[in-house]
Image (tube, rainbow, N blue to C red; front, side, top):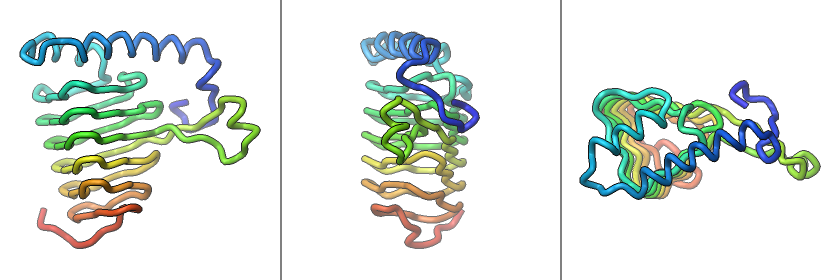
Length: 180
């Protein structure tokens, strides 16, 4: 799965078990009082692969494994962040994410016979430093977003975005350069 090769997401007992463990942790996290900041952070430290010291993920939050997610310093995500982390998802420092953002690493084969078998592949997503992702953005497998870039609300990011740009739309395209 982490190597970008076909894997069986529906029948591999180890993967199913890892997702169940993650779902239990997410269930607990999403039911904590918002004011219980210490325990919220403790649960996220148990769940996520690696974090900086200063980060906030507002509830609710959903992911598949958690261990494949890395967040840098001064990370903030608003409500309803969904990360399907079958491959690594890496966030740099000073990343801000608006509500209702989805980040997906898993994809399914075009071949219907392979899809029926439950096979899929996964490709990493990398978000650079000082990136702002607007509300309702969907980031697809294998995408990288360069440092200092802004992704406009409602965008579907299906190709990598360079550093120091404003990009918007479906599909997401660079509309102009911005100062770093």
